[in-house]
Image (cartoon, rainbow, N blue to C red):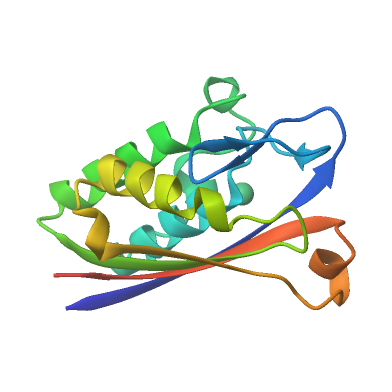
Length: 155
Ligand code: MG
């Protein structure tokens, strides 16, 4: 068994779509980034790469590479799973948390779980997604950005 941990942050800006766990969520702002800036999926990808001892997403999908401009993070997650599979590693489960003051995410959680589960080839039961606010504290609390963290187990 191997454990992996991932963490990511993106800034919230006007004029961008908000995509979390592959779900486009109606909100006045979106996350800024080279790809679709899906902070949740980025944390999950880093957890998987961490468990595999395969560095991080910046190493595999550099933001200087035009191929990844506007890229669907869900597609990149599929690429990460291929890296694990090539090493003979099998994903057991994922547990992730999105930290965002706004908007309310509870009604989108099940769809996020389903999207991630499909991308990594797991049953939804083995992909948990949580959301929390940060009680108005710090950059997530002020709505300046969102962060996400994730852990996973592989065997
Ligand atoms: Mg990121």
